[in-house]
Length: 127
Image (cartoon, rainbow, N blue to C red; front, side, top):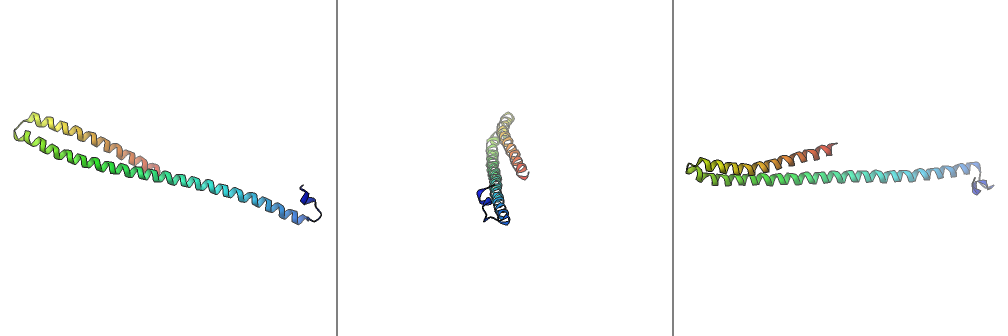
């Protein structure tokens, strides 16, 4: 027992009130700590979600640029193949087609990879 609880001025009711205040203050410190931990988790989840969203937007922008690059390559192909087609040089326009198709296939593979990455980011965000 504490010296205050043994003093003649402390009645049993007063000791009970002191015990309640002491235990209430112990409970109050714990919820505040839980709140801070909960807030920290929510902020971390929010930051993670924002990070995934930014990454997905970046990937979408990169896809758009690659699609524009593909459109440009197709225009270049038309110009390059026209002369060989006009001359009737099948071997040359087949070579040109293969050359440009390879460039486009590489870009399309990169686009497909980026789309899969976006799907993974969105799937992770929904979980």
